[in-house]
Length: 574
Image 1 (tube, rainbow, N blue to C red):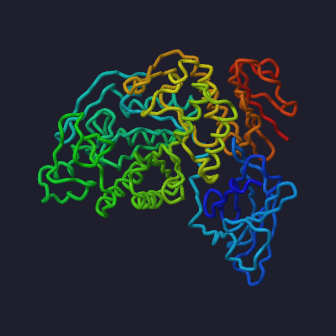
Image 2 (spheres, rainbow, N blue to C red):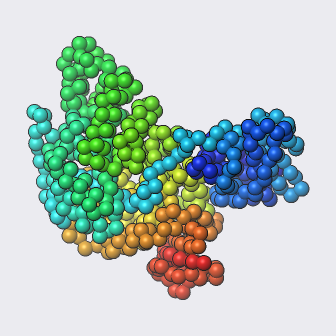
């Protein structure tokens, strides 16, 4: 038995409650090393000595190239649990508890693993509607000026004596007039990049947190947009920029002007006085900011007064305009305590409001149920790039990465992840595919059939490409006749119609070394949906006979035989 590979972490993604009764426990072991794994659990507060333990077999829920992940879900009769694992490999039988291996039990229950109390306040409970969400990400400057139209014209307006600019003419009214287009696509959730008053076209250099940028319209235009979305069944998530402000924000200008005498001198992180704002775009400022961007000074959200201010911002847009949530910019660089306050504020107004953090790395730290409901899953994009776009990994390696994405968080958080192929910060995925639409379609189909919220960046459905910022934020090509549009409609409809694709468990069926055929199943009691994605140039082997359910969708198929870069989606009921 390879003991070095065995891992269990109490009170983590390896031991968590789904609700007030159901528990999930996991254990990691070397791939193919164990013949069996059992969980034994008991009441850690019972008066009996020794504790009576109840045994349950664990199943292999997932495996990657190195490890097997054993898992069991059960209804616990106890709120306080002590537990251990029994591992078997051939004739070898070992007990594992307290991070140590043993050949016998002890009479001191404190030496076992502990789940101290299944407390309702500690449950991770993202809003249930997130499992059904299909997100459309709109960069407002680039989307629409009117129905099926964008002017493409630069604009410069004034907000309280300060110049603000737009680049391509997109407006909030333009979004409202194209809600029919989004509904026809099958979208039910909008995520809109920043709309607040700011100097540059991207609106991440904010100068006001309580008003819409005049290049996009008015506050009432935004109210009309949200109301119209809600009337037609769409939710609206907006972008919150609380890591930094713009240097035209009146609080920062006050510090620049008054120095030590400014009441806002502590509102900015590690701000040196007097403040010197370098005019050279290539110069490094001597104050903390977003990256090294001199126009975006970093906010001191660890200060009570600053945190109070931005929690008021949070409450204002939820109460006044009834938005459905926030996507939170540069979330991993903001202190945790601020986000916990922000979370409590948002949930006090609307418990169903969603908070999505921009975290590019593994985000378990922020998904404890008290900071964010979800994060932007850039790892999803990264792994899809290697398998579908560059072809640099085979199905086995891709499945290993997919398994890691599923096992690194609690189950509830996996279902709430915002999965994406591209965004306003990265190259278009179609460009990464070198314009290979067959490969791109396979990635989109994977996006629509994987656990989590699929997010479509505006224009992907019309074949928009772009590698640099100016290209991938280009104006929406309204009127373009593109074969990807009906493909997207069908892919989104597939997800919307099949509950197993939104709420079912995930199981790998085939992911062999050297192969580029990836087959997986989403399963609910009584039904399952199987997806077979083939990136092999050679013809793939026949699918097993037991997959003889109803064929939902096919491309480049001959019977059950998958042709070059084809796919099948198959539904089975029992």
